[in-house]
Length: 231
Image (tube, rainbow, N blue to C red; front, side, top):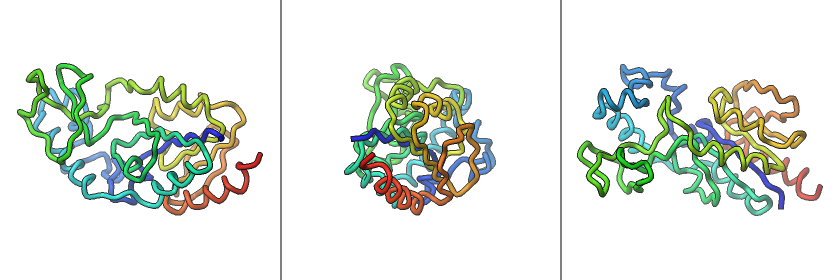
């Protein structure tokens, strides 16, 4: 079974009502996103940071996977699908995808500010100051903030090296280190890029599907079944 690697970004979740930073214009209420999504912001005003992520988490609990997420699950019948996502939502998992690696953390999890290996699933949308880990340390969102290391990038690079086919969905390929994963894929493999917007890539062997994810994934499924099941 061929290895199909999917690199997904915020565009795939936009149709589920999950706002992207680009749609926010870099702002949330009157605040620059950097003021609510960085270690410095947490040190300066943890209550504001909590409120920002609580609002995003509340919307996530109300959201549902869309046809883009669901179509990728269908591909597991024909390919060994591994998703590497820049998204912090759990819509891939809720759609039924079996193998999902998160690069930038997970919104429905919290972790200890004392011991980052202590990570907790949240079954509710609100995280508060005073919510602590088992050692009494404040919990923070389990999110990779601007300026923090992407600890799963090495695992993602190793996975990318195994790709027989690469699919990129809903990402501008401007955010590093995630965008650099294309450089780890084997030379000459087919690459499909689904996005309604123009996306620049140095790779000349990309097949562009200029559609939103729900439509683009349906087209992708037909292309892959027609061209890559028997070769």
